[in-house]
Structures are given as structure tokens and as C-alpha cells.
Amino acid sequence: MPTTDTLPSHPAPPRWWLIGVSAGESAADGACLAVPIPAVGSVGTPVPLTQAQLPRFVAEQEAQGAVRWVWSDTPHWARLLIDAGIRVARCHDLRLCHAILASSEHVTDPAPLRAAAEWAVGPALPVPEVAPEATLFDLGLAAAQPDSVPHTASAALAEFARQRTASEGNPGLQILLAAESAGALIAAEMSAAGLPWDAIEHDRILAAELGPRPAPGAKPARMIALGEQVRAALGDPQASLDSPPKLVRSLRSAGIGVASTSKWELMEHEHPAIAPLLSYKKLARLLSANGWVWLDEWVRDGRYRPVYVPGGVVTGRWASSGGGALQLPRQLRPALRADPGWRLVSADVAQLEPRVLAATAGDHALAAAARGTDLYSGIVASGAVTTREEAKFAMLGAMYGATTGEAGRLAPRLRRSYQAAMGMLDRAAATGERGGQVSTRLGRTSPLPSPEWRAEQAQASLPGASTADEARARRASREYGRFTRNFVVQGTAAEWALAWLGGLRARLAALPEIGPAELASGASGRTFARRAHLVFFLHDEVIVHAPETLAEDVAAAITAAAADAGQLLFPGAPIDFPLDLRIAERSDAK
DNA sequence: AAAGCTCGCGCC
DNA sequence: AAAAGGCGCGAGCTTT
Image (cartoon, rainbow, N blue to C red; front, top):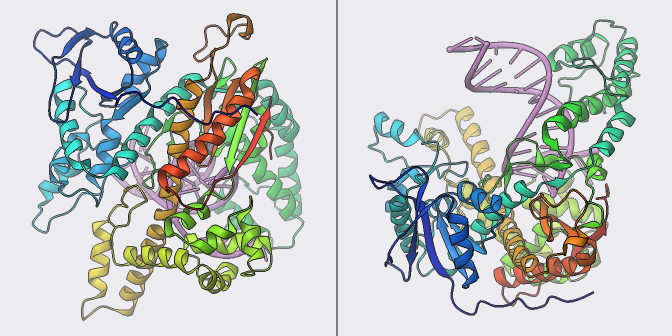
């Protein structure tokens, strides 16, 4: 396998340029300003540009060496560049970075950032501090969020200055801001490129499960047949299977004592109606979530284009909006298919979160268990538990705060073997139970609990509090502790994944473009038709669409980027992040 | 009619 | 199989 061990390092520190809308009186529609920022606190002479001139200007600057583009909102600005075929190496997304800094407990004076509430737009809103003297009027103002951040150059310059001050002297935060911004670029590029999708294979999978595509509004044949079986077994020809409340009533009249229609509960009962009902529910889910309607709406010209929302989850994970990109059922994986002459290079990290836990906590015993490729087998080998399944369940339970059941029973054994890791989790939980904040490795900070949560805790500690008040408050307290316990692991894992993605993007950019002869027929108009590019990212998994001739190089780049990410977050730590790598025409269902 | 809710289940 | 963290989405149903 060819190696890509070293990246061309930046010959000079990146230059900073800010791009914004020109707000001058004489500014025509679409007039922009590019403002050089030669040093902290200084601003060079702005360059006026039309929107049409912008891509070329950006490309010229990129050609002269590393630039970091500062802008209000990546989807807004990157789209112009991507459509013009221009790739930027780095950016600084003011909206996303504002969200991180305004709520970070590592920023000494967040007040100027919090006062600039016009930048607090989007899903990763910091929970506003509610001062005791705040009036309802103040709260109303704080709650009224604008639809988008300001795009003017002057507003962006002011916000950038606040952010520089806030992150000064904190290299962790600076890495996080860079990684978050790289993620925003990648999300925009992945939406533009699309995930190569074989609609015919998708239809084949649907037809095999559901029967041929029915007329609009009609139920597929297999669902009709299963529905009849269920109704016959229940002895209730009118039973509705699509409304949980009605279905519960039908099941109870047939003597099946369920309180809900969840499959876990259904599976506990022996009745001839159960098996066909579970099959029916599975098919109904497939049809409504990823059926023919989804295919028509989301797949065009052989590409599925989901909308990713970087920073959409408080822990730093991405969310998605529309198309359900983060919930694609494994069943449909075979519909992911490379273009002719291309390959899908897929990689996922084996047990990312426990590895991150071992590295963050500096737990040598857990790091030793992770030494091989399978951390859970390593835990078994250490003698803490007896089977791999037990190890997995106990570890997930420890990170999620399980107290009962099998995971709760196994917890003490992990606690003995991995004191540092479990101690870190317990401290994070204790902080959350008190209503405090915790932070990830690089400094993303958990939100404060809501004012209602605080009121509930305060109520329970009053002299006249009822036992019910106390029990409710304790439950809410434990719940928040489970959240902060998980936050430190999930959030740091999300940072590792962002660093991996960002590093991979840089390495892919260093790979050659393919020549016109290798272009797939009909592909010349596509974005990224000539180079290996990211097409999918899901928490601990990436898929790169690559020309066949470059597939091995891409695999090496993915591996090297994973090693880089580990060193960036945990320099010198004795932990690695092994990958499951596959090069194939189709993504397999695993 | 639209908006908002819960349920259930897909992903990690 | 186990029930513990983070999500998005569609369907049904209730409220406005």
C-alpha cells in the first residue's frame, strides 16, 4: 500500500482573510469585501469584489499559499465557491465558533460574545445565563433568535475580534475552532457532491421486502397480507395496525396484555399475532422512512444529497436535516454504489468512544486492553469480565450511566480494573448532578441545565419539600449526570472524528486529479468528478468516493489521518485508533 | 388548517 | 436478550 505519511507542511503560517457583504451606501447587490487581517487586531485595506469575482479572487489567494477564510456562515459562502469549482484549504466559521466560545467554560470573559446575540443562531445555542434580576422582557429578548447571522464584513470583523480575544492562549480551543470549521466545509462539499446511490438496487430491495411498488396511497402487497394475518390471529377484522393507541386496545382485547406497541414489549408475549405484527411494523418503518417516496424526493441523477448540520448536537456531533442521512438503515447499504471505474473506500473506527475514554483519562490498564484491534476482547483477556458481549455491554453501560440490569451488575468489575477511566466518568456525572458544566478534551462545554431544572432542585431542598418533590428532583439530577457523563466521551470522540475528517480532506486534496480519459461517461459536469472526495460521515465512519486507481492511496490517507487525529488530541498517549477499511464498488451491509 | 405533541424505531 | 447517552423522522393524534 503506498504511503502518505507526511503532508506538505505549511511553508508559512496561514494568512487570514475575511469575506463579508459590503454594507456601504453605494454597494450594489452582491457586493462583497475581502479584508486582509495581517496580524491580531490589525486590518488591511479591503478589496471590493462583486459576487461573480469572488471565486477567482479566492482561487488566486489560495494559489499564493495557505489562507484561512473567515466568514459568517460556511453554507452561505462555500456554496458560491464550490459551484465555481474552487476549493479552499481552511476557513473559520464565525457562527459555529461563536457557539463554542460563548458557552465554553474555558473562556475567561465570555460577556462580549454573549452580548453579540445576533451570532447565536442555529442548533448549537448556548443556554443563556438567567440573571436573578432578569425580567420577562429580558427573557423574551434573549429567546428571540434571528434567522441568520449578519453577513456584512463589518459585523464579521467585530465578531472575529471578539473570538480571537476569547480563544487567545488556548491552543485546545483554537484546534477545536479549526476542526469545527473544517467540518463545516466538508459538510458543504459532501452535500454538493452527493452520495452515489443506485436507485435501481434500492427499488430492488424495497420490492423484495414489500412487494412491487403500489399505487400512490395504497399499501404494498406484503404489508396487506401481513395485516390480514394479524387481524385473523387477533380475531379482530377491524384492528388498526398503524395507530399505536388503537393497536394497544386491539391487542388487549385479544388477551395480549401490553401497555405499548414497542417491539421489545411485543416480543415478550406468546401469541400467533406477534410474529406477523413485528414483520408488519418492520416493513411499515422501511416504507415510511426510506420507501419509494423517499427515493423520489432525495435521489436525483444517481446522487443522494442529504443536508448535514455540523455542530447540530450539543456534544459536537453532527445532526442532519431532511433525508435522514444519519439513520440510513444498514439494509439499504447495498444501494450505495461507486460510479463505473470508481470505488467506495469505507472506514470505521473500532470502539472509538472507549478508546477516547482511555486516552482522556490516561487509564493505562484500559489503554493496554485497547492495544490489539478489539478493545472488548482486550477487556476479557484482562480478566475483568468473561465474555466479549459482557465487556461491550459493561463498557457502554459505564459510559451511559446504566445502574440497573446486566450493565449495572458488571459495573463494579470495570470500576476495579479501570479506576482512572471510571473515576473520570463518575466525576463528570457528579458535576452534572450538581447542575455544573463539563468539557471535552479540546474545550467544548456542556450546556447548563434549564431554569426549570434549577427551580426543581431548589424546590426539593426547601424545608417543606414533599418526598415526591425530592424524588423527582433526584431523578432529574441523575438524568443530567448521565448526560454530562456521556458528554465528555461522546464530545471528545466527536472532536477526534472532526480532526480525522479535516486531516483526511487535506490529504485527499494532495492526491492527483484523474485525466479526462478516466472520467466516467456523463460525469464531466459533476462536482468533484475528477478527484477522490468524501461522500459520507457518520460519527465514527467515513466513505470516500475515489477513482479506482487511487483507492489504495485513499485508504492510506484515511489511516494516516486517523493516526494524526490521535496525536493531535492525545500527544504521546499509548493509544491507537484502528480502522476497519474496505475498498469496494458497493458498500456492504456489514 | 397549521402547529405541536407523543410514540416508535432507524443510526451511532 | 439486556434499557443507559446523543439524534431525526413519519404517523397519528391533540390543541390552537
